[in-house]
Image (cartoon, rainbow over all chains, first blue to last red):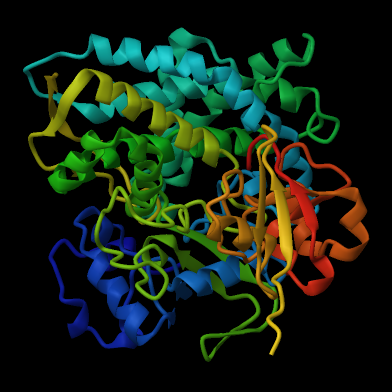
Length: 415
Length: 111
């Protein structure tokens, strides 16, 4: 691509209604970092819900912005391929294969191989361990002074969980956080790292996990993700790049998403204090609040597909070969499906009906694990603290994919 | 005019709790559970055969009448836990007079 990336990101706010609709581009990562994307998507949902733009930092692409159109694309996997990648930007130099970015039948085989790690039965087994860790961590936090909730709680808890899923050496667990951050900070989603830089860092990840793979292959099969892959006939012979791709998928899938929902829940309950009061008055609302947080936060803003044939949608013709971006972050604000979508309501009816996990064969595999971690976190918070008080605005991640926080200053108040 | 009785469905939770409710023609087994607040069926996608959170086991006596799984349903069930021969997605079984008396059981947990 010949267009310089610097032509596009703008560091100043622009009223989306001042831009001709055919030029409206929602892919600029800065829009999300500055939280200016909402008005852009609102306009698209109203005026041009299936929207094509010829020229962007990521080339020409379609934006699908309404809930039911997103469900349509997500469930038509024969017309809309997930190959070669599920994010808006392509990277010819470094795009390791992973099953989220594969079509049937290979996708199904690989996904099925690792699913037992997050089965309902497996989750029941790890629940007491998660609860104990959450309790220990909450009891170790400083009181009466400000600290970064993202680092001390959200990252720490999700990283501990991830280490358990992989049976990864616990003392080295922050490597998982690091590799996750490297993977999602790429130029394919408006981040900072080039393909070369990411590849170099992730080579260490491959080497480290290569050693674990050898170790697990020589042991009896277990339910950790490495062992499941090492003993599965269809995955034993993966090329190193495919192994790395699937590692990145599982690391990012189990890390960033839950992390940012954990931070998002604290932020939302402080932004809407009457909702926090409601939750305190009735902690049985926690599971519903968890679903509402996952909708409100939408930890992954988009998933991308490639049209394998011409498809009519919303009065437009998506042409074979076109890039199609489903904006989950917009579908979750569609007032034709979700009542008062801009409000955060811990007792929302039908709160599970959101698009954050995607739909169809690529639907989030770890959804129940993510929900369980958030539920336990809040059950344990409510036992200990009157309030987790947000004492400053969060710092956000610059990305059009990960809706993340890097800093959320809080002070704890015990009962 | 004589009022037609609505078809009945018996839902049996994994813990054995039995719920017998009326589900009007054209409504799905998933909707019947949600509308009557029967626990054990989530129906996250709202009935688009797209999330596999309305997994049920159809009583063997009713298998023939409830029909075949579609290709999409097969794909979605492929990723659910504890899938058996008589596993179906509740959103894909639409009620009719023919299914009056249908019995379905719920799995231990939805995916």
